[in-house]
Length: 230
Image (cartoon, rainbow, N blue to C red):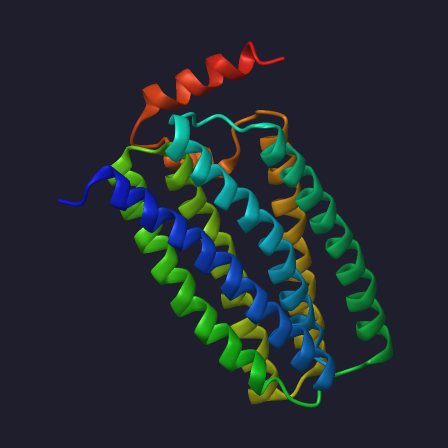
């Protein structure tokens, strides 16, 4: 059985991998999204950059828990969540406007093959991260790390949306499929923004709700503490 120290080290490595992967994914998705004129892939890439900000907050969180085992968010994490939430709302607005414009003008991508490749790779990486984050979180009995694993599922959902939209266009060559995929990504980004602001206000978000399903006493304890938070 791994020691607590080695588990925390692995949790830090997972946080770093999350940040670094999202940077490379964002660069590739934005580049090929612009090159191939696919809005779904471009929006997916911008979302990856927002996830980098969120990932840095998670990285900081793991280091803090390692130092003092305090699962409650500090000032830096709350600030990062507010910035992340704002970025998600801006992304949502931009994608909705551009998607509607593309639907009206009939714009369509040149190809979505890179969207398929990036989506498949992302699904595999996100699955690996979720599996290991949950394993480490359960071993450390850390609801915060388990909640992070549950939030990583959102990235997988985005990857599936990109995959379906990209495959749909390659198979049927209907330009509106790409725009519809972008609107779905915008909806998920809006939900992520709302979740970020809820967390910044010390409210229990959907990730924490899911993490506490197997431990309802922990969820009630967190809610009681939040009721008395300033």
